[in-house]
Image (tube, rainbow, N blue to C red):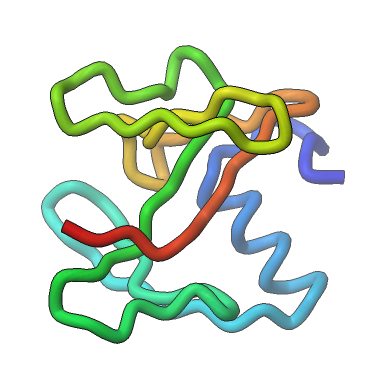
Amino acid sequence: SLLDGQLNGEAAVMQLVGNHGVSITWEESSYGKYINSIGCVQPTEANEFVQIFTSVEKDKGVDAYAVTIDYKGTSLTTSRFGITGMSVEKDCIILIRVGSY
């Protein structure tokens, strides 16, 4: 289970990668780890990037750039943290997709 202990978003992603053979590329930045691609989520255009949404209230973005979507009846908002700082809670949803600007 992803909730064995207190996992952050990075640990949950690494568990997914390890358990299911999902490929991931990322890089370190001054803001923490930045996911360049994961599985089939692979930006191909210059204006595209990996976008991460969460259902965890304390992690939801609150600035003017935050985006909220409905995902199968649950409100998800772009995370205000990088993957390393994100929380994993019981029954939470973390959605990773290609975004663009």
